[in-house]
Length: 226
Image (tube, rainbow, N blue to C red; front, side, top):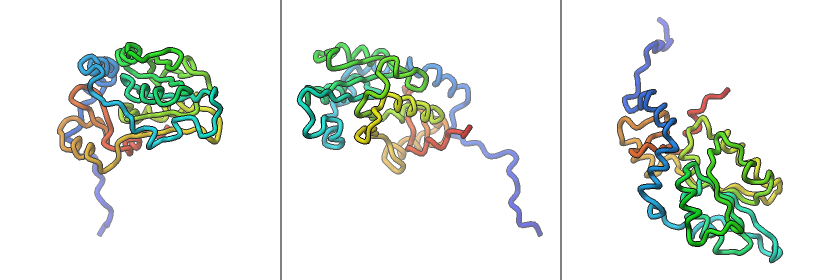
């Protein structure tokens, strides 16, 4: 008697998966959906992140650094500047490069009362496709900050995005990349897994407003190795 498991020729479909048509639509309209998000919420949706330097003290110049020495930070996915302005206000030596997928978000950063091109370089960029060195000198940044950024990138594009960011990071033992994002087993995952017909692939979901997020970092596993 054979002990082999039967081959599932027609695997059961996941009833929560979004149709391929809707997945393609979300991809095509991603920038528009983020623009609408910022149009509706302006600068009122997120609070300023004053906690950042408690968690990541290396975002500021190191102790003993020369008073005139600039410290360059690059924030990926800056939104409306909720990390940018708390950072530049803490130390006059900090210069922040920042970008966002949404042109409207970048516009709001530049409209901020404290925006100063001598302290902040804000620009629109799709980091999965556009070379960051067009706006930031190669190998010039001391720290990179990514707060809920990988959450908004489809899993198959994450590696390209990270490699792009690495091009502007200083080649130094002191250079750092700081990431804050969702994790497996957190409340965000439980909420998303309880919603029907919003699943793009394993651990990667669409919000009701058309923006996307993973349920946890293992969304990277959706990427197929080339």
